[in-house]
Structure formats: structure tokens, C-alpha cells
Length: 148
Image (cartoon, rainbow, N blue to C red):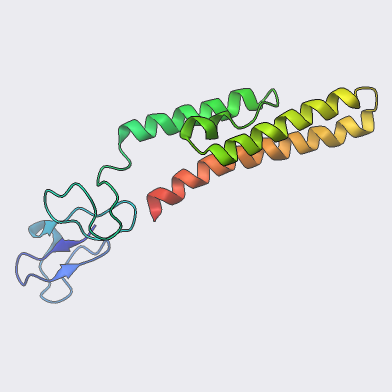
């Protein structure tokens, strides 16, 4: 988080513990809030970022709970080859519907080839791949949003 040195007024970025101009400690300086979306320094009391126009509290505790519930909606029904519910819960409609359609196609194919074990093995592999892609998409999309 950027901070301003109390001695010389220089703005320092990163996790450095002292001012690179005068050597004053970070503890004496003033920390500034940073936009969680684009990383730009925010002015005091702002509710929107001046750089990306995103709300300052874009990723609060409510969003964390929603994301956790989306993971639950992805993992539990996904064990039964029902995909896309976590994405739909988060409002990612295109991905959610694509995953739901792949789920329906898998169920249809399993019904058609119920007596052919070779096809069922490959369909099980496809099911595990779709399940993993769905889970990793929800995990990494959240992690990357926080880091950017």
C-alpha cells in the first residue's frame, strides 16, 4: 500500500519499510488506500476510483460470502454432474449456461451409452475435466481479481 513520508513528503510504493529519499521509517508516514481493481492511490473519502471508476468497497465481506456460496454451488452439485450453478449464482450467465448445457449433454450421452463401458469411462473423464475447469475458474477468477 502506498504511503507518504512524514519527513520529506515522498510517496513510496510497495512494502518497503523506510523512505528511499530521507530514510524515515514507514511507521511515521501516512498510508493511503489503494483501489483493489487497478491499484491506483485513492483520495481520502472517495467512494469511486478516479482511474477505473469502480466502487472503492468492490470486494467486501459480502462479496466474499457470495463467492464462498458460489464455490459450494459449484462443488456439491458438480459431484453429481450438475455444472454451472456457481457461475449462475455469481451472475456469470454465459459461462454458467455453457457449463449447464455441457452437463445436460453429458447426462444425455450417459443415457445413450449406458451399456457400453468404454464410452462411460471416457464420459467420466470428461465429467471430471469439466468439474475441475469449473472449480478452477471460480477459484482463480477470484484470486486474480484481488491481485490486479
